[in-house]
Image (cartoon, rainbow over all chains, first blue to last red; front, side, top):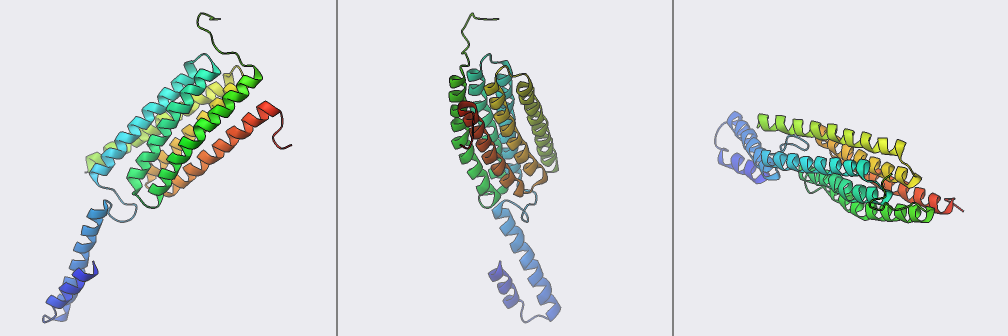
Length: 151
Length: 95
């Protein structure tokens, strides 16, 4: 951005002062929009580019689907172990898809990096927690569901 | 561009609605779980759904700060699950 402005100042140096100032301001404007176009966003947390918005929307739809499927499994499965199977995989994948949408939306630095950290922490903690609860259920003597054993 | 932004806003709003429905379903399982591990599993699922809601809110308002809130909620939910499992097995958390 700075070299472009300097070049504009140098090339328009023989002209009068007002024209130089105007050309410099215009050059910085053009350079700012070019940098924003490369970065994919206008200024900071402004509106991102259309492709980025489309990818974020698709990831949000996928995450919503997996959240609903996980909840359906939690409501419909007959056994605590089956329910744990539904929530610890499908719901975690839904939340991870939301985090991935956040990574696409907020860029690779700052909040986007925090989104990646969130994905890693979800994938580390959800199976561990599910394993601990299932071991607790086993020690408490919760029975597994047997086919044909409908009440 | 503006129509795509409208579609994006609609998708995020629909995601928030669906995540709220998922949280309410998990809350139903918390209330009517036959056993205590059922309730713990459902509470864990509620925590995951709330994490998704916070990320969707960050996408909605366009501020990346809320993603950090979501990461913190995920970690706190894991600690809650571990403590509940330990309490269920040993009857005590800190001995």
